[in-house]
Image 1 (cartoon, rainbow, N blue to C red):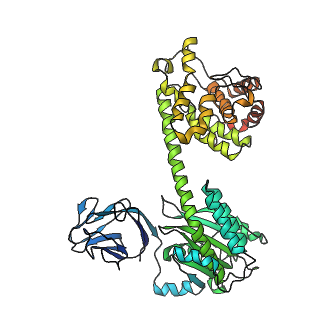
Image 2 (image 1 turned 180 degrees about the vertical axis):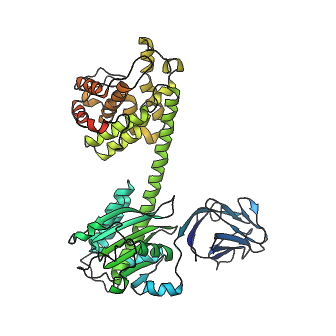
Length: 508
């Protein structure tokens, strides 16, 4: 049988933004006993049925008074397929198909017998029950306060969500320590493939070299079952079940003796799995360990979902910035690829100089926009095929202040204004537009200044041929302490091997 999770979200009152996660067939209507209860007079008591078939999710109108619609088309008596982003309307009430997660087929009863004998315990609770259980864990006798310590630490991470990768690493490190696991892994469902993708791994105690030989640091079979059935699993290895993982071999190689795999989920949807294991030299996990892991998973899942949304928003934001940068390059016939190369060089330099993560993120965001002000420069100057006159050069210099004025209109970009405005300032204070000297010019702008100058020197223009790499390095060295930050110049010259295949630049 096909296994799938359907996420529906209300789009208008009285169910606006309310969500349902379905893994089996259900009815929709104004009857309060139904899974999808819609309290609206345009909806019949048993209005329609949503079913999961071998061909996917279907909806069928049940002779309702006001009809059922998909994307505005009224349905007749038969079943119709529903897909992601469809709008399904019951009477006057619409629900959007937010996502469909297809999972591996569940096994027949006969197959399940051979699969289940090594599952010591399964645990299924809704989100609220899992949170409540963190303080009541049966006969478990943990180290003093360890479960509450884990909860508080997880809460701290959630209150400081920034980068998804770091959030997952922090959560995993604490969970591995609290539950004395040899290793932990977090895998999340990819929005593009609907498959589990490894996002974080943490090794606790390192007493067996075999742990480093794993190709996938979690049992794919158990993880898939965990997601398909929506159950958290406690697994105990046995001699009769060494081949459960097939080609992955993580269990059959004897590396994992006891496993906990819990569902990361919110009231809205399943996000992925948290996988913990112990080796043969450790005591097996207990049912109370399973409940604690499940409770922690429920507690941190909202933060993980939030971080996933932040990452998605950041990606969209960076894509928008890239489009804006490309709009500038389309106007300037002679700088094709300049923005991408300057950004790549600046990122390499920033990381080689061990600049802190906050500044690196500003460089990542701001460098693509360093020439955004050229949008305000007349085409006759911007596209001039010959060298600019002194007067034209002064007008061209205005791209720094024009760019800063544009960025000021976007509050989220305020922190990258120094890159846009000040990447033509000089270490000796003879640059423009403000004549900033030394460290008065922010370091993020000083990094971009070197990257921008490097690419400008080696790029061909109609009125001159670009310099060779070696000659460009010589010019950068000549500018040490006058045009450029001397410390950054030293770092830049030490990383020349990274630019050996210029203009092809490795990703930082």
